Image (cartoon, rainbow, N blue to C red):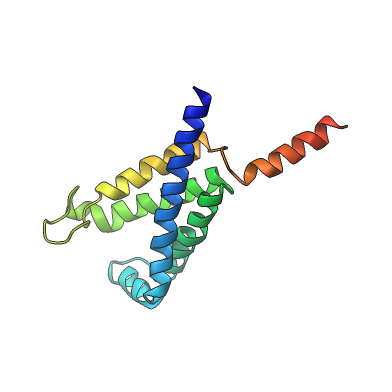
Length: 142
């Protein structure tokens, strides 16, 4: 049963990581200034666009390789809560019907996955395990 749970956590971690890495990368490729301007237009300090994009891109990559999963997932949870309450809640669960993906349904799903990983972690094929195993081996040798 434990292997099934770890495999499931691995799938969630990698999919969430890919999704956020791509979202962050697109923000930089499309011109981060556009995101800065949009943040300013909805009343959020533009500098936070850089913070969000870095959390998405660097955090997404970290999730893919399994580095700091719990911390990164907690940060992504905060980003999702911010997105839902500042930009998405007013347009509703499915959005306005005019703009695909404008609602907060996907943000809510990402938030649930991120919270799950923040609480439970993900050990399978995680870089973190290299450090933990090395540390445990060193302590066992003392």
